Each structure stands twice: as structure tokens, then as C-alpha cells.
Image (cartoon, rainbow, N blue to C red; front, top):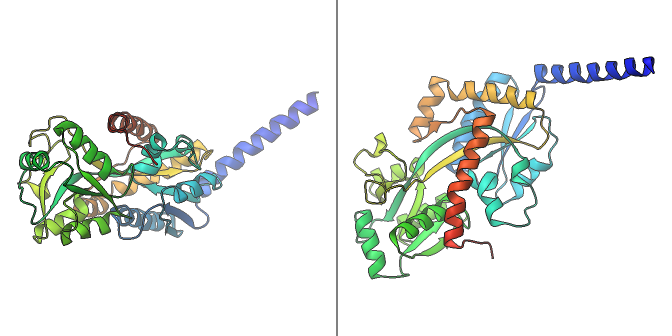
Amino acid sequence: MRNFGLLALLAVMTAWTGGARAQDTYPSQTVRVVLPFPAGSTTDTLTRIVADQLSRKWGKAVIVENIPGLHIGAERVSRADPDGYTLLSSPPSPLTINKLLYQNLPYDPDKLMPITLLATGPNVLDLRKDLPVNSVKELIAYAKANPGKLTYASQGVGSTAQLSTALLEQMAGIKMLQVPYRGALPALNDVIAGHVDMFFDTATTSVPMFRSGQIKIIAVGSEKRIPALAEVPTMAEAGLAGFRSITWFALAAPPGTPTALIAKINRDTVEVLKDPKVVERLHALQLDPGATSPEETAQFFADELKLWGKVIAEAHISVQ
């Protein structure tokens, strides 16, 4: 029995020291960051900035793999080895909202392990240039005078654009027709072309289109005005007190990833996000660095679920 106990202790010590060495030597090979959205999106640009800086920091390649699809990318990461070499960079839906909409997801969002918020940024309310309204008040009046005729773009059921519009509908007592797209850029392009009336989009992609006169922006979804649109009021200032619509992006790891490894990746990613040159690049994209701890990230997810869960329930949003 004494020998057995000694052997068991030695086994535990060997496993512990082996695990410690794994954290010390990580990464020793290429790290793959799965992105469940197409190239060219805000998520894509942000992820590539962070991946490039982590690659420089780690001395190992960090590649971004675009796997568009509602669940495919998140499912792949959920099934990946929990060794830190496959990570997920994602906007809200795959990490939080999907669990409120789908009963039989091929993965469990609750088991994906939060690492950090990469960035947050305001959504803005875009209108096609020739829509005869110039404020939120006028938009609401127009919608009430033309019930069911206003169209809005979204990236599909559960997207931030759809939920933000649902919140607007609930607070204003109006109803609009959704036109789903396979990404933000096709949606924005159709607003520019005049094929759809409005779109809640990130400031990142919309501000340049606004400055070039291709669209209108009548409000921002953040609590405060943003420097890039100092003349544009918040939704609250426009008369919808309590309205909040921001976009965010987070980094997560497969279920079962050791907490020591999560802490290592978090520490290095936060250091990257706080680098003044990275901060400057993110601000140019109308984004603020996240740089949260794993615990803070998990709490942020919980707060988002509470906010949008209420909107989803009241709007009876579901996947057919």
C-alpha cells in the first residue's frame, strides 16, 4: 500500500510538472483562430490585427481561418483538442445569442471557455440616402404612417442587427420587414444601393460610407456619442431612453482547456490589446479594446444574455 501511494503521488507530480511545462512552452506550433464569419467583416479585420501581434509576440504563426456559417466554426472549436492551438474569435451570436434561439445546437456555448473580450464598439442606425427621414423621431413617424413597409437588413435570425431593430420596434411601437443577408457587407451594400431602407451596422464599416455621402446615419447605439460622429445623437438622446446596442468580439477556447493555459493566452492577448499601436488601430476602426479577464468576460456574456433574452422573448423571435 505504501509503495502504491508513493507511485500515485509520483504520477500526480509528473502530470502537474508536465502541465506546467506545457504552459511555459506554449505555443510550440501554429495556432489556428477560427472565425465563423466571412473575410472582410469587422470581426475579420480585428481578429487579423490581434493574430498578427500574437504571432510576433509568440514567435509562432497565428493563422485566421474563416468558416462562415451559423454554427460550423463554433462547433469545430468545441470539438477541438483543448490544447490552445485552436481558438474561436467571434461576435455575439455563436457565443451567447444562439443558445436562446436553437434547441438542438451542435455545440454547447456554455462549455466554450471565455478568454477575453477583444473589442467593443457602437452600432449605428444607417438609412438609405433617399429615405425621406432625417431623425429617429421622423423614422418612427414614417414607420407608423407606412405600417409594415419599411425594410431592414440583418445577418439573419439572432444577429445584432435583428435584435437591435426588434428593440427599436418594441420601444417605438412600430413594425418593419426583415431582409436577411449573408454578412454585414452585402447588407450595407444594399442600403447604399437603395434596395433596403435601414440597417444597424458597426460604426467601423458605416462611418466611411456616411462620410462619403452614400448613406445616412441618424443615431448611435452606445450610451455616449462617439468622436467620429460627434454631430450624430445617441438613440437615447433621440428619444428612446435606455436603448443600447453595441457590438463586441471575444476570444474563446475549447471545453476543457486548462485554466493555466487560458490564463497564459489571456495575459498575452490583453498585453497585445493594450499596446498603444494596437489601441490606435482599433480606434481607427471605431472600436475600444476589451482586454478583460476570463471571469469578467464570462460575466459580460451573462449580462448580454439577460438583455437580449428579454428582447427575444417579447419579440417572439425563433428559428423556423
